[in-house]
Length: 492
Image 1 (cartoon, helix red, strand yellow):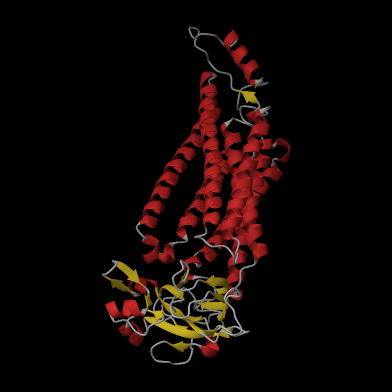
Image 2: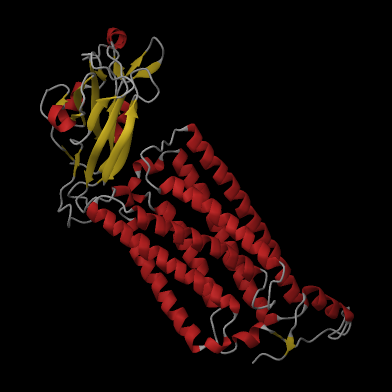
């Protein structure tokens, strides 16, 4: 990945004088592929990083210099940076005179790193001096030197597969100043620029796009053959299949382009997000419409349709805002920023409320539809909705189980050690969406009897002792309440 920097590294003593990012890197022998553009090479190139004193701290008469450290290491060594100071029972990452007197760290005005890490290359620290009166930024490639050996800058060669960290540290307590960091870093894997933790998403979306395309082709053929007998519900199903096909295809080509160029296309990313959110919103609407019996029990939804569309639109707007806020690149976006986190929290809260509204309505509607069919002895339709209920029950149980597992794994730091499987978290949800859609496609498959099946009632054998007979007042009243016009006929 080619990662662009445009951030402020706070002066020593501030809350943001240490900034870092992580990415999964494969060694040549462990890489899933070694084709272009990586050609089997794995390295980090951060020589194009540029540093300059923040305009607020710039003075043309100040000849002071602030030391900035750039460290690269495997994430498992993060805890080995710094020293524990018994005086305040805190871990200090910067070597000052006060810390040196208590821990023996050296040199001062720098990041604390053990010498044995520097010797075996597990943690490599480059230092660059930023002049306060400089009018141009200083580039690490030209001015940076290895902290202990004073060697010139060189790329960091990845010899071991792992999650790697690039850390920026402003530890100069003698000449403190805010430093503006610009430029870019190159994280090259043996197969290309795609981050190691996301590599699995590329073939995954390729396979998923193929499956959606196959389902879409079969569905389109069935719809064409039975075009005179299609129900409105089947047009909604067609929309979801088309959205799923477009979304997965766009995301697949987005990952392929990202892997080849190193930069992610904002247009492709945004388009994929729009299709993805639209698919999720329409899928919720579709499941609710099916649960209400639309197209099988009810020829229309009447006054319920506007309420369904309002709920679906609310989900679309909230989910779109959340996905754009989280996924679109922004140089000014900070995960730790209070305003940013407050916005995310509010969006998640409102999205959860809308989802709860969908789930409760779906549950209530499905129960009522099954009860209605049981009362009217509509055994064929009842079997259909019981199968659909099984699909939803299995999906809900699986969803809850997977959500609990991912939360527990995140709390325990599982994915830090198993970063290569981190992409599975989102992939499972995509598979679940597809599974539910395939089940709906199978259950509501177009046929020559679709409309007759939908708008007909099976002749039932009523118990003479049962309250209300086939022509009893109870049935007539219920039919009037539901606003349904059913043609009595026998299914063949």
